[in-house]
Length: 110
Length: 158
Image 1 (cartoon, rainbow over the protein chains, first blue to last red):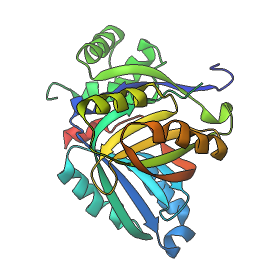
Image 2 (tube, rainbow over the protein chains, first blue to last red):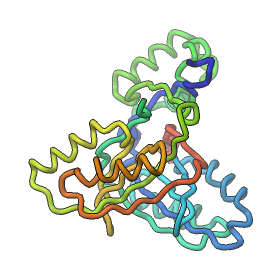
Image 3 (cartoon, chains in turn brown, green):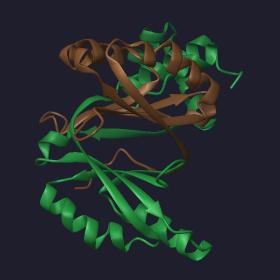
């Protein structure tokens, strides 16, 4: 399965609480016309931000859903004001704090 | 937390990207000789920094699947119903992630769907039958721009 590419990679999962990354935030991002016209720049910036674990392109009223980890809410606030909201072409960001992680698996249903 | 050295951090960074490498490959990457590297890796496992090692499957190899996010509005649940809710979320393989959130909605689910038709059935047969679910707001994703299991280990140095 490894050869056929069904298994993409093997990775170790690190306990984020042990590392002190206690804040988990979902940010819904909407781009303006300029941002949409320069999607590659946005994508490149997202790949660079270590705090952003996932980024999905959404259908509907927002453009992206980002999953972000930070040490605490203050650290997220710094990331928000100094990095994320500074990206060119951002129109709006709505952040939702995840209170608890009820389930988190990397297993796909087979 | 304070007990992590710069080498520990390099080990964690390397195995979050690829845990299939041999101890000698890993040792070379992090600048240690083989047996101290192995001991440090064991310590990181024993102390719980490394939760587990997993194989990440390529979703595109299965069938046409995509991720949907479902935000749920919930009724206030009794302890019994809450544990029933948690148990059902846990045993439903299509629900990959579940978080409780603050805001307009109470629960956020990440679900892997094989088609819109499948998802529609899933809403009625599974999601709406979870205890306490009042309303579901679904957003379909078009693509994955980034999908990482590697958390930023280095941020603790700040």
